[in-house]
Amino acid sequence: MLSTYSAQNPYLSAIIWLTITIGVYLISLVIFRLLGRRPVFHPMIFCIALLTIVLFYAGVGVTAYQAHTNVLTWLLGPATVALAVPLYTQLSSIRQNTLAIMLPILIGGTIAPFLALAGLYFVVLDKHVRLSLLTKSITSPLAIETSQHIGGIPGLAVVIVIFTGIVGAIFASVVYRIFKITSAPAQGLALGTVGHAIGTAQGFQMSQKIGAFATLGLCINGVLTAIILPIIFFLIS
Amino acid sequence: MQWFKYALALLSLVGLWFIGLGLSTFIPLPASLLGLLILLLGLVWLKRIPHALLTVSQFVLGHMLVLFVPATMGILLYGETLADNLLWLVLSIVISTLISLGITAWVCQWLWQAKTVNSPASNDNE
Image 1 (spheres, one colour):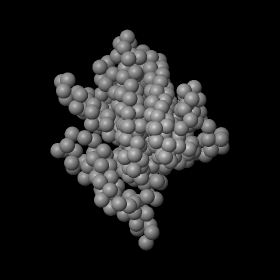
Image 2 (cartoon, rainbow over the protein chains, first blue to last red):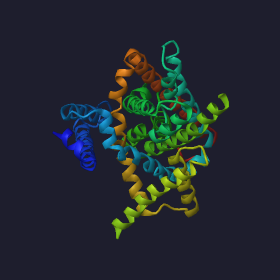
Image 3 (cartoon, chains in turn blue, yellow):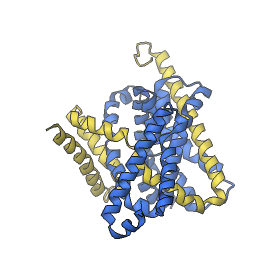
Image 4 (cartoon, rainbow over the protein chains, first blue to last red):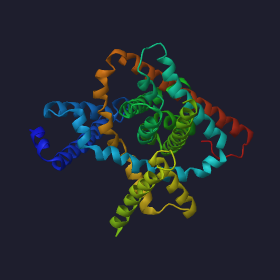
């Protein structure tokens, strides 16, 4: 079985689990495309389901799996650096429409975490769990580090971030129909601000323009939240 | 030769992240954010995007989802510890996400339209 190999050679098990992860991702993409690219069948859902089954039959725990595939999580850092490229292409758009871009991002970036906290006001929760909610709308690599700064649980913060992104990606088109949002900049900006990288990926599925504006929301909200949250916590404590 | 350029672009992203990591010991900001800002400044100074960097970054960002997979599996870890409050937690995240999505988009559309009405010369509307 896979688990006996893992115990013997950490490099071999890393290669095996990386291959399995990429394989599962590609299968999920194929399923998503075969089912007509509907947001409800987000590839991440199939990834979680398939990997849960594989891990169960291989007898490998989630923590061990995360240790084997650590390099993928680490690569999120350099991938975030790459966001500078789409951000650069939108610089002139930011200069021309500063208010119409910055104000919605500021509003969305503020209400998203605080609405989540408000909804849990009467629920008894650990303080660290509450703090882990504050980074829910920024992309994982920023959330991990910001969560560490403010006393959240980085592992949980990431799970909340990804869950938020998937929810945003799946229901965006329904929400836009209810709120009568037709303009591409508005659709994109909100997806990126609230749904970070996963929302942005959904934006690029909808159109190039929506994707470009989603990138703006993702970058600016991530940057602002990563800068402002630690400052607020520094002032409070 | 082309592959060499792609490899170089990929390595420069990793390198910039490490520079960000080094800087984050002096500046209390995430390493990836500092790397992003340096690359942005570099592109502003260069005034164009090198072809290889554009191709590589489009590929990386297009398949960023796979990098989230190991972290996502953490859902299985926290499901048990949060079992008592899981329903409330999930409900609160779903509702707050949908409301903020709607409000953010609505504010943006309203500001965008106001701007277009004030300056008909604007060519941003579709």
